[in-house]
Every structure is written in C-alpha cells, then in structure tokens.
Image 1 (cartoon, rainbow, N blue to C red):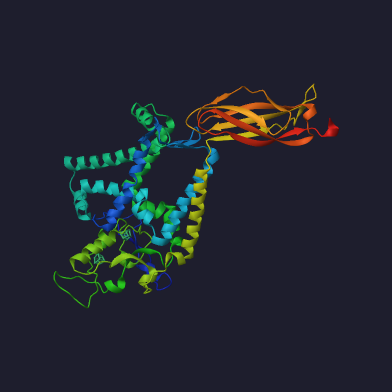
Image 2 (cartoon, rainbow, N blue to C red):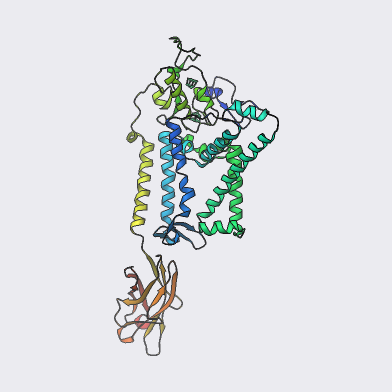
Length: 477
Ligand code: SF4
Ligand code: SF4
C-alpha cells in the first residue's frame, strides 16, 4: 500500500512556521523520479564517471606490480614509484584532513554538491533506479502499471533481470574494494576458484549486502536517516551559500496556462510539477529549502526546459543564496566570507604539509639506539666499549647494499659488523654494532659520534645519524 508522505508539522504560526510546509518522505513513499537531460544532469554524469577510477585503478600495473596497493599486512601503501611506510603515515592523515576541509569549504559555498553529484550512495542509487526504469518503467505511472499487472513469465523475467543486475553491481563493488588491498588479478583467480581468504569473503559479503540494500531499496532514506554528513551540513551553510531555490517573487501566483495563452496576473510558475517529478528525493522545492534536498539541480534542468517551452527566461529555479533571494542582489565575494577564509587557510596549511612531505620523503630510514644496560663496558686492555642497535629501512622497490661506518671520535673503532649488508626492498635491517675507544684517546663523559651508511650498490645517497658515546668520568676509572 502506498502511504502518503508525512506532513512534517502542523501550521502553528511560530518560529518553525516555514517548516509546516515541508513534506518529508520518511520511507513510506517510493520515489520514481523522471529522468531528463540538462546542464546539471550532465554534471552529475561527470561526477559519476569519476567513480570509474574506483573500478579501474586496481588493475593498473607498474613495473610488474600493482600500481596502487594498500598493503595493510605489510604496512605499506604503494602509489606507482612511491611507497609510504607507517613512518610517513602523517602525510595520509594530512591528505584526509585536506579532503575533509575541502568538503566543508565546498558545502559552505555551494551546499551539498558532494551529495548531489559525487556521493557513492546517490551515484549507486542513480544507477540502480536507471536499471529499474529500463525493466519496470521510468515513470511512476508505468511502474504502478507494472506493479499492478498480474504475474506472468515476462514480468518474472524482468524482476529476475533487475535483481541479477543489481546483485552483479553490488558484488563487483565489494570485490573491487578488496582489490585495493591485495593483488587484483590474484584476487579474481582466488574468488573464481573459491580459494579466497576468509577476510575477502567477509568484505565482499558486507559490501554486496549494503550496496544492494542501500542503493536498491533504501535509496534517499539512507541520506535522511543514516548519513552523518547530511546532518552536519546545516551548520556549514550561511546566508551566502548558494542552493537550488525557487524564485517565489517571480513564480507566484502560480497557475496553469493553456498553450499559447498569457496571463499577466500570474507568475512564471505554470504548476506543471515537473520539478517535483524529477526530484530523486521527492521534494517540492517551491516550498523552500528542505532537509532532504541533495542539491542535485535536477529540478533546475526540469524547470529550465519548461521555461524554454513557454518562452520565459530560465532560472525560475536556480542556484541562489538566501541573501540574493531576499533582494541583496550582489552575493558577498568569497574573500570577504570568514568561513571561506578559515577553510582556505587550513587547506593551504595541509597542502603545504603534504608538499613538504613528498619533497622530503627519503628512500631510507636510519636510526641508531645506544644500549642503556649497561651504558659502557671496560675491556681488559682498558678501552671502553658501547653497544648500539642499528635499524635501516629500505623504502625503495630495489635492493641496496650498504656499509656501516663511524666518524667524529678520535681512537674509535667499529666492531661486530660484516663488511657489507644487502637490504631487500621494503625490509628493515637490524644489527648490533660495537664501538671501542682506546684508553689513551678516551674522553670522559659523553662525546658525539656519527654513524654513516655508505650505499655501495643502489641509487640512494649516503645517510648518517648523530648519536653519543658514553665513557666513565675520570674519577670513576
Ligand atoms: S529539490 Fe531539486 S536539487 Fe533538491 S534534491 Fe530535489 S531535484 Fe535535487
Ligand atoms: S517546473 Fe517550474 S514551472 Fe513547473 S511547477 Fe516547477 S517551478 Fe513551476
């Protein structure tokens, strides 16, 4: 049974007066949005096409390896030539901060454009409803006819085809997610031969179920009930945020027009309801900005097409700010809006951090830790010995051969090491080194000491690490 949308609030004339006109579809009504071409529909196709990267990137190979691989078990993130290790994870944190602030900045300027044009929930829902439209009809009337038609082989086949396609997309979405974390081609082979790791089956089951249910059945209700970002966005708006808005000044009083007829007593809105019919969330934008609006602009395309037909200027529904609709014709420039300035400063700071991180990424990571227990040992010939733990991480995709050396202390010699060491790609080499200083050259207390890594094979340049050598005080000897 089709329920009517909940009438949000009774008119009580108080502070929430305008909300009394909102219609909120809280899940009782199935929305079948009419599809139309137009500028914003094209923009949506463009936003949707960016998701192709999600499906394609895991299959790109680079030097016989997966070009982009988030290798969680080995704690390495590979991006073509670049490998990011846990030591450099702060760069990923900055990148996430950059995108979070970018989202906030875009929302404060142009509302929920992320939801309308790019969010995976609205994009997948758009694809699912397009498929549904192909099998069951692309208008509410056609779908109602299909629903009310008696069961037949044809109807059954259409139902099965729709759900099979929905499930195939959901499965592909889940499998592709796993492909970012493991070799994509091996993953396909393992999945097709039913040999995949249990974790892969769990991830695929979760993604497949959620994609199928969220995009196929819950649709705009996910935005309304489950999405935290949808809730947060209200606080990012201000009077200068541009949103799809109905120009009531120009449109009212609305009224139907016969073909060729003009009526100067009426506004531009001919009450054709096309803007409502194309809305994927079932909103009548003529009742004002509403919580469920994902600012997709489909109602703008619809109304523009109507205005073209009745020879009226476009823009009865358009992206406009509250300030503009209140008659302040000039929108405040971006550089005068404190919110935009603060977001821009954070964006610039995180961009600078990311750039610094990329420019200062080293191909190795070297550290030296002097042993504390004991601080030193006195040998039978009177010389003093310190023990160190050396750790060298090779962040490159090729092995390197290195030699450890010391400098900076007269009479110091290095012991306990081989002549050279070969360090495989992405491996940490740990070794214990002994440094001895003869009694005659010994200085009491703490002295600076430098460990050098000389790269004898590999493109990487030499590196060094400053540490200390500890000797007993004069009177302790
Ligand atoms: S009201 Fe317009 S912009 Fe908002 S969701 Fe509906 S069609 Fe999209
Ligand atoms: S599409 Fe335009 S003319 Fe038609 S009802 Fe909506 S606002 Fe009025």
